[in-house]
Amino acid sequence: QLQLQESGPGLVKPSETLSLTCTVSGGSVSSSSFYWGWIRQPPGKGLEWIGSFYYIGSTYYNPSLKSRVNISVDTSKNQFSLKLRSVTAADTAVYYCVRQRGTGYGDYWGQGTLVSVSS
Amino acid sequence: EVVLTQSPATLSLSPGERATLSCRASQRVSTYLAWYQQKPGQAPRLLIYDASNRATGVPARFSGSGSGTDFTLTISSLEPEDFAVYYCQQRSNWLTPITFGQGTRLEIK
Image (cartoon, rainbow over all chains, first blue to last red; front, side, top):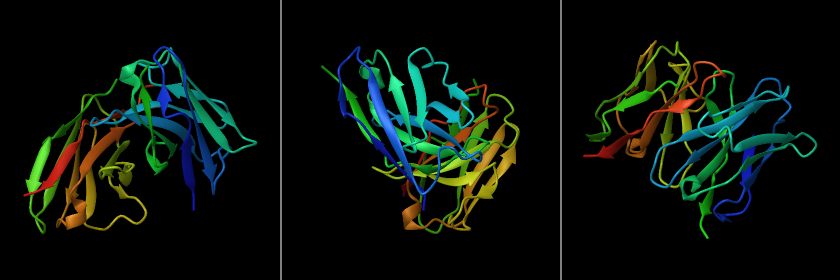
C-alpha cells in the first residue's frame, strides 16, 4: 500500500525558507507512471497546487509561486522535497504531498502537515 | 489560468436525498477533471477522475459527468458519511497551472 508522509518544521519565521520532505513507501518516486507534487490549504480555505515533478527531471510550478519555489527529488531515499523562500503569513497552510496521475489528479495524499509562519 | 467555479457554495440535504454538485470551467478542459471529498482534519480523498471514472473503493452512489466546461458530481442517495466539502480540480496540460474550485459544503439539513 502506497504511503506518503510529510515532515519538516511546523513553524517558520517570516522571510525565511520553508522546507518540507515527503517520504514515499510502497512505491517509487522514479516510476514513469506518476508525477509527484505538493498542494497546500490555508486554514479554513481551499486547495492550491504548488508544483509537481516527473521522474525524468521535469518540474512544473504554479506561476503565482514559481519565483519562490523549488521541488527536488532524492531517489536514493525515495523522497521529494519542497522549498519555499521568503515566506510570509500568507504561506501558513497545511501542506500535502501527493502522487499524481498523468492527467493531474492526486490519487494518494499524505496526511498533511501544518506550517505556520510567525515570528 | 483556468478558473473553476463550483455551485452551490453550500448544499443542505437530508440522508437518502440526491445531491447534484456543479463545477464550471472558464475554458475547455476536455475531461481532465477530478472530484475530491474532504472531511475535517483529513486530506482530500479522490472520488472521480477524468470526469466520470470512479476511483478505487468509491461507492457506486458517486458518479461524475460532463466535458468541456461543465461538470457534475452526483450522489444518488446520501449516506451520513457523505456530508463533507467537495472540490473539483482540473489539469488542462502540464504547462498551465492545476487549479481547484472553491468547494461545495454538503451539510445535513
